[in-house]
Length: 222
Length: 278
Image: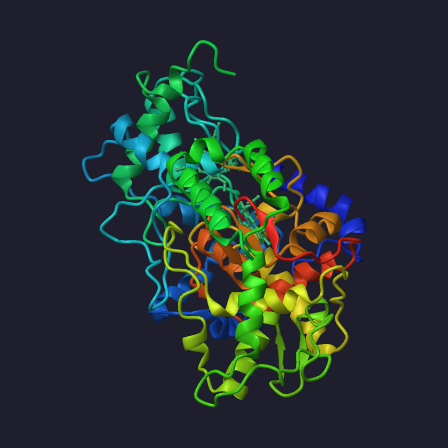
């Protein structure tokens, strides 16, 4: 059971009485998946029919259907499938260059689909970023941070320095759903998402390298 | 309006500030200060004047004005029209937002194709290229005719009920390259921030009221007025979903879903609103 989502769910239940007339949270359950996807076909502009795949995902389908509370069997199936999807760098190194990782963590470019006549689509020549600060406090020198995820400042300092930790961190960033079936955190690796295996390895170094600013916060940082 | 140049210069200097010092500007306090500074002097007011001109001007292949457009209260009735949109229209058999309905009328009355009308609302993700467009000007003019009124968007028929349910589904469904739902960032988000920005809970009646009664809003970050569709689209882009068509079923459904919460609040429509980012 995913504790975080369970809490969110409990909160949603508690608030349902005020926010919605219904007594249980309703995620638009009256509209079937089929009906939704038909409406979506009419509502989204597709440059390429493949772009529609962004609305389809086996794992999220279960998370949506169970309101982020998959049962034991569903959980097992998700974890197995997502774990299997993880790809490691060709050279086998899960620990890359923290300076490169720093850029990946800060930048937000990538994965946006445009519309003809709009110059909005991301330029595929520009490497993607992950915008981790959207949800996490990481390097305390960075001026903005979100709090949807746990703070990662001192991440490496507070954790054992061993291969298991490197692999855990790599897997978490590459595919958060491999350890937490309906994690709020986006999956970053794989063709449907933003980062290459090498970029994930660089992010791992940014979090774990003793030289990285993540593990060397200024003395008077909060 | 004789202070035109002064106001525009102010707007431009704000934009320049936003581009050179994003970190400083990202703090909520700084934005509150700008909002106050501009409260009595909202550049968005120009969109009302421009929109009025465009509304009455004979335009398009059919050389007609939009005066005969029916926004739900009868042809040409603008007072209170925005407060009851989106609604179901018999003639198109669609639930339409204000912007969607303007598109319908531009096509029917003036012969202007929707693709022409929405061409340049949003040019790039960096927003440096954002520029004013006619559709938003017309929408701002019409919306302002409901100033001082409360939203009254409650489903009145099966089609509107369906739109509410579809909007709810779109809002709660996790999807896109980021595995996110609107609800992940906008439901039960008290105390939650995204990259230093407070996340408004759109299922909270009071918050929804405050947010929605201000659109179309003058957005300082863009030096431009932004309407309902664009607000949906900006977050759809953040979710890395495909492009949401203006006035589409899901655009109307999402807008109706959020306005249904706003309609239960005491907040009154006051447009153009003024917002730091949005």
